[in-house]
Length: 240
Image 1 (cartoon, rainbow, N blue to C red):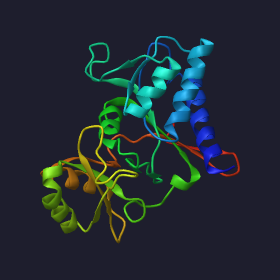
Image 2: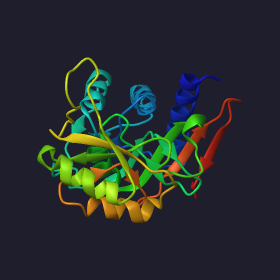
Image 3: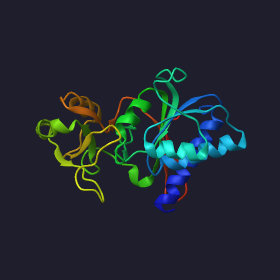
């Protein structure tokens, strides 16, 4: 299976399995992530809703991309601040840029990691869907950790990240002059290290820097992980 087929397989398997296990159910509050693997999961969820398997689903989205998809599929979208959501979700499902055997993740290749973390750290259950290329042994040396920053703090934050051993690159726009601007109006520094990092410690250290909004290390709410393989099998991690 190619990468696109793996993404669809991981997403479909995750949604179907979670429904079978009773972890996705009618009336639930669900967080929906962003990116090329999360979108098939949104589509699969919509298929179950349209078939009548699920009713009264209340979605909270992590980006304009996901909001547009939900509008197209007819899935009602709410804010974390709406009284009906009350800042707490039953489950959130999303992709990842890298995931380790311990189920630590890097997210934010699409620049939505701040909203993703708000949604996924306030969910009772967090689920990651991924293709085989996203499965790694360690974090920090290959796919960059995105750090969303206040623009005015770019130089001091870069200096502080350099002191933590990071090599930082300001994310530039594609077909747009200047830096990428997130949905929150901020900029992103993409950070890599020469040696693997401790995800738990580094997540906290980065967030302690003045001017940092949030980073793309996800270590606090360990997800259930569905990883599709080239041979058509799906590895499931942390499903109890």
